[in-house]
Image 1 (spheres, rainbow, N blue to C red):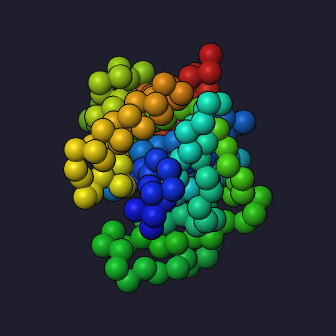
Image 2 (image 1 turned 90 degrees about the vertical axis):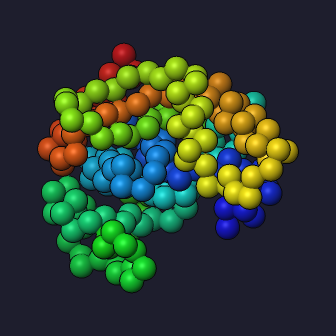
Length: 199
């Protein structure tokens, strides 16, 4: 699927995305960095899910626009217990090595049209206190390329295309790193940290 969308001109990233307080936040990164938990936390607090795993992005003269995927979030039982996103047992995915279950969202918790991305935030675990920090271009491009879903098979031509697309994306969207302790309690400051980006 990623290859097909890449051929249609989309930038494909392993990321979750949420509209929260009239801003759109993209959270790219590798598996188990907390993307889905962050998305679920924001949805529980009034946000709308756009995508939970695969981000399809179109770059235009007016910005970077993300397209909605499906109204489902995969969460561990521990994450769902803490956040309280769903009271259902969830959908089981036999091949999911992380033992997460899928929880469907209501239409009111899912954004159903493309939206312009305001912020790109890379979640990372750390041992100290929570921190939100603006990234330099070299650090941003390295993380963004690392989250690409269409990087293979890679040849010189595709390498140039991906670099150009990721560079164009970063010219349209502010990039930050969000470091937090590997604990659900560290989510408590997330909303305040996001609001701080706008001030």
